[in-house]
Structure formats: C-alpha cells, structure tokens
Image 1 (cartoon, rainbow over the protein chains, first blue to last red):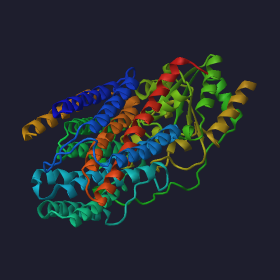
Image 2: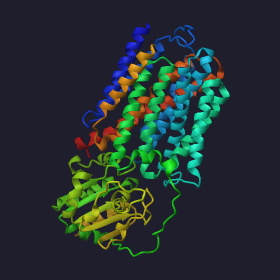
Image 3: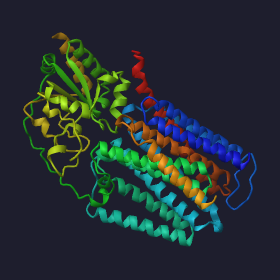
Image 4: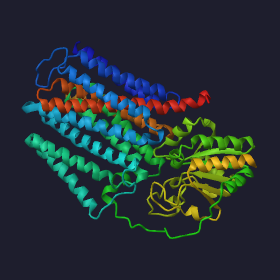
Length: 468
Length: 96
C-alpha cells in the first residue's frame, strides 16, 4: 500500500471520529455516532497491518509487519479483558469504569512514548524529544490520576478531599521536579532520567487528584480524558501519523469544552477545581454532628402523605441506584399517576456520580422520558408541589449550596425541594452525602425521614399505598 | 511531514473539536465523555507501530503492554458507550 493510500484511509478514519463526536452531541444520533466512531477506530487499526511504515531512521520495513504474533496476541488479551468488563459492569459503577478506561489509555500513550524514545536514538530532533517527554509526563499523570478517581468512585478510599499539612508545597515541589527532569531529559537524552520522569509524573498524578472532593471527580475524569487526547496527538507527531494527530487533538479540544460544560452544569469554577490542589486548606471536621431531633416516619405515614397529594416530585439520587430501586420507584410513580396525582422526576444534572448518569439509570427502568424534568424546569414548580420525595439523594438538594458560602458545594445549583409543602427523605442513615457535608434540610420541621434501604422502603410504601 | 502542515492540522482539529460539542445537554455529558474516551483508544495504532519496530525484548515487552492497555481502552470504551446509549433508546420500545 502506498503512503498516499495509507494516509487517505487514515483521513477517512479521522472524519469518522468527527462525525462520531457530532453524533454523540444529540440524543437522536448518539448511538449511531458511537458506532461511526467504532468504525473509524476499526479502519485505523486494520489498515496499519497492510502498510509497511518505514522506521524513523529511514530503515524500510516489509510486510507482514514484524512481531505480528505478539501484536495480535496482545490485542486478543486486551479484548478479553475490555469487552467482558464493559458488558458486565453495573450501570451504577459505570463512571469508575470510564475513569479506568481513560487511565489505561493514558498509560498506553506513555508506554508508546517510552518505547519510541528508546528507538529514537541520536537522530531525533529536539521537537520530537519534547513531544515524547510531553506524552510520558501527561500520559503518566492521566494514568495515576485516573486510578485515584477510580478508587474514589469505587469507595476504595475516602471520597472527601485528602489534604495533608504542607500538601500544596509537596504538590508544587513535585511539579517543579517534573518540569526540571523534563528539561534534563530533553538536554541529556538518557533512559534513566526518562524513567525518573515517569515515576515523578505518576506521583504528581496521585497528588493532583487526592485533594479533589467527591463531587468534583467527574470534572477531573473529563479533564484527564482531554489530557490523554493531547498525548495521543503528541504521539502522532513523533510517529508521523496524521490520524493520531487528528484523533488526539479532537478529543483534547472537545474534552476541554466538555469539562467546562460539566463544571458550568455543576456550578463549579474550573479553575478552583484544577488548582484546588494548590489552594486547598486542611478542613476541620466541623461537626454539626451532635444529636438533633429529626422527624422520622413509617411507610404508612409516607403513603398517607402521598395519597392526599395533588403533585409529587420524585428526586432520585445515587442511593436509589445503589439499592437497584429504579423499577420500584417507577411502580410507585405509576400507582400515584393511576390515582390522578401529578408526578414528575426532578433530575439534577449531576444526580448519580456523573452528569447524565441518573438519566441512564432511569432509562434502564423504562421510565417515560416525558416524566423526567430537568432542574430548570422543575425548580419553579416546587412551590406548587405537595410532596417532594428525595430518594437516596443528599448533596443535590442541600440548601447549604445556596446559603453557606465556603462550604464545598457552595454555588452548585440545587433542586429547591425545600420550597415544597412536605419533604420526604428516604435514606439509609444520617450519613452525609458524597461531598461529605451536613444537610440542614433533614432537621426542617416539614421534613419526614424514612430510614432503610431505598428499595425495601419503597416496596413498603407501595404496598401501604395500595391498601389505602 | 512539514512542520507547518502538522501545525495546520493541529489548529484546525482544535477548532473542529470545539465546534462539534458546543451545545450538548447535560444528559449526554457522560456518554459523550465515554465516547471521546474510546476514540483516544486509537493510540492502539501507535502501539502497533512501535511494536512492529521493536528490536529488543524490553521494547517489545513495553509495546505489548501498551497494545493490551490501548485495546482495553478502545474496545471496552465503545462497548460501554453503546450500552449506555442503548438504554436511552430502550425506553421508546416499551418492552416490559
């Protein structure tokens, strides 16, 4: 295959990626968009086996490409790991899987750059070495950072910001060391400095993500995703692959925009999230945790309250997903509707663990799309709502976001359930939400709490309601 | 490749990337991130290239690891994105 044909086919794969991102931006074409992306990736991968790409130093190569057995074997192993993981993952755990996939992508880019560096030899131009070093640094940061976000989401570690005394100096120091060693690698060329650089970058990735609070984790995943895209573009430069440059840059640019959109939807300052590592102060565990009276009710109390309501808004949160209560909540909604009660789901943009996560989960339970109301639609209606029933959500209805400057979620738009006549919380315990902040609304006189597993509680409420 | 050609491709791709995702409802943020994530799995192509140029066992070992990771990223990424989007579609079919 001539270089021209190879490049042309690579370009067509690049066009597929553009169409894929375009398609993914609209609900109607999203699935097709993803398939077009997969098509582009398949084209790009298959064609490489039919083109003898000359080596950097000009050595021509021939077909079949060298180490073919190893290459196909490694792809088979990757497929055997990736596909079952993607097929079997619970939809509740999907955000951490995306984080993990992003991390291994970053790791792959870093490894490619390291091998390329070993290969480059003396003939390398400074620009190539800089691009290689960039890929190693950012790829490693993306890898270790994504592993930390995975651990936070999987709750293998605390979801609260991890801040230690002097932490910001350690982080700043690591960053300076990364930059310093980068300069050393570029000027001195050596394998040992490169490995030191990789190690320091991995460390920086960990330190960079540790101070990020649970609520900001999706933004960081999106940012690291954009980072990985840029490393792919830099690899494309070193490897003379137009396709990698196009694909990597597309992901880098669209990922940056997406990160900003997410931050806006959550009312977070992107700058604050990114540089939280440098500005975070150790938080005292300010405990409003002392015993205060709450009003807890029985499933029958809840059923009666619902039975005489005219309008009910259901606010689902991650707890609903954890309890796998999507289907039960739909049963409750159907029952209320059959009694002539107006029912809507109030979906916070970041309900669940990622923007849009709750929509995916409710779609899984066949909840009609028309009943899902976005925050801006549902907020003005709370004043006319008799009962707001909050199921396994906490941070997204916490009035502290509007009233308490300085609290970690201050400024995040919330669902204003406190405007409803009655508020019912279905909770497992008094434990605060993902962001780790106390919710004053729980102590409000118009709030009733129903403790227990969301699914078990809802089942009891449904049967009590049927008996009325 | 000429440096100016590379820079042109890069700059144009940045603008295309900005434009294609400029207006997306928050519902689609997660699938979009996941789809973009799968696209950068195309680093697999780079991993295959360096594997085919490897001369030492160290180089080959590292490239094989890169291929495994990149394949997981790419194939797993597209499959999980498709699963997410399938659910959005499922609600129209009114199956159960």
